Length: 118
Image 1 (cartoon, rainbow, N blue to C red):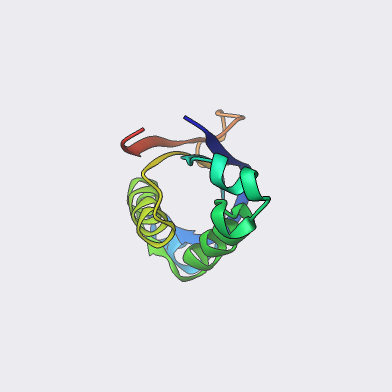
Image 2 (image 1 turned 45 degrees about the vertical axis):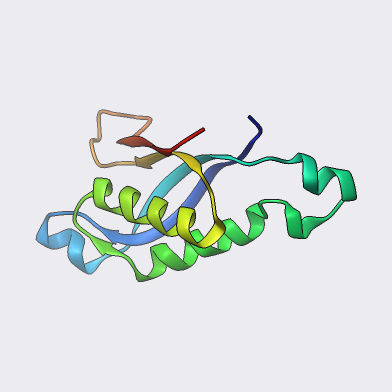
């Protein structure tokens, strides 16, 4: 199985359960891996057959701009649903980190989900 990945993508969004969080935008850091058969794109050097990570990144940014969830779990689930449907992706792994949510956790806290079939 081939994989296309996007690592360290930072997006600003409204996220959090506390009242003070509802009025600000916070940074989330995303690491994604997608199952994708790269052979057709590589055979003809054809971007239209590749999973265009620039387009995927732009869509993620647009999703985050509109999102207003309390839970990072909800953000992760909804984002993966959108990406799988819009880009015809069969498998996704998403690690979502919310830096600063727990000050003692210097690397951040968050969730990691995997959806679909490899």
